[in-house]
Image (tube, rainbow, N blue to C red; front, side, top):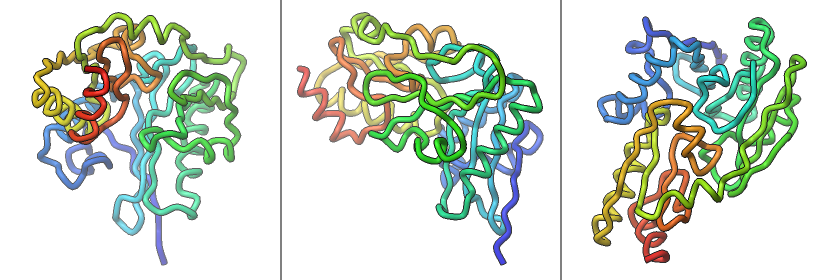
Length: 252
């Protein structure tokens, strides 16, 4: 009989337990960067909870108070879910992880939980499971982004900024804005830089160091990764070098 348990990562058990994503390459720069990022964020009350099925990683959820979040959304006294992923669907694992976050929010007297979704990409959690668990859509942004909220208190409803076009106009040169929140962003950055080099384009990389910088510069609500060239959004998620080259050529 299968058994599933939740394991909360902490600074003390992080090296032993490891995070879920890119766990097959624990020596990669992305994985190590993620662990460093987690260690810093634990101080800011980030929660990273793995779901283990028969001692094997089967899913996880990552969330944090909104004032430290890596998503471009404004609000007060909310948790923000960064990531939710499960290996095996149909077992209620995603709902179990979401309910754990809801319970945590209630215990810490938060006014709700926020999550950013997008039906056009797998790089954000799927909307449907949140709707099933009582979330409601409250805002939208360009490129298919949706803002979902689960209310547990009386604070104002969170919202996206509206100056997305203005953010793009700042960058004519090829610019990669990124953080260490996702371990796959090293691969994403390398693929983009490789494509740019082959086309003779210099890629400028901006490592976002604070939430304020992220809120002001990110071209999408995703926050942790964005590529801009000639005032146009190239991507907000990982591309292969071939796909990146094709997109860049369209703007050359």
